[in-house]
Amino acid sequence: MVILKKRGLSEVVTTIIIILVVLIALGIIWAVIRPLIGKTDTEITYTSSCVAVDLEVKSCVYSNNFIGVSIEKQNTFADLRGIKLILSNGSIYEFNLPAIPGNIPFLLPSIPAPPPPLSVDVAGIINVDGNLRTCQPSGQSVQCN
Image 1: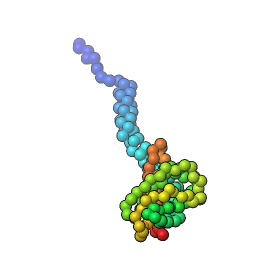
Image 2: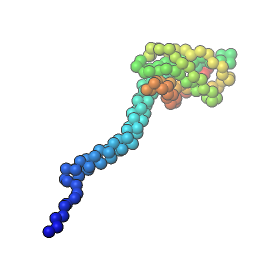
Image 3: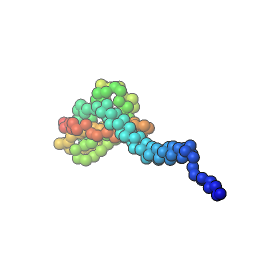
Image 4: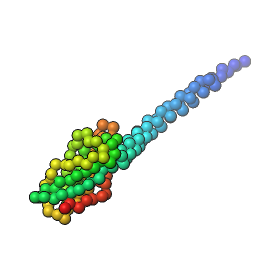
């Protein structure tokens, strides 16, 4: 009589292999999705920080081929690191700022400019996760007198 020995995987070994395959698949999926989630989180932080900056050009005075600009920061909690001035002739000037308390107008150094008519808009430069990023301009240009 010939006795056949059954060869195959036991149920326990099969279950362990299925669990390992599922864990490996989950690890691969997480490795792909995690960077996407991190980018979204950074973009949300950037957008909310830009909304918090809330800059407003209070005045723009033209004198002897220079303009003087007064800007007010409306929010005391914004992490403002700089200002970008956008002139209507296409010129852009960036200024690094010391800590400026909110709701207090401040004057920027005079900058060379063509004669009026000229308008000025402002954008904040903020710190997001250790990187300086420029917000969108306020959209409220002020004519220089």
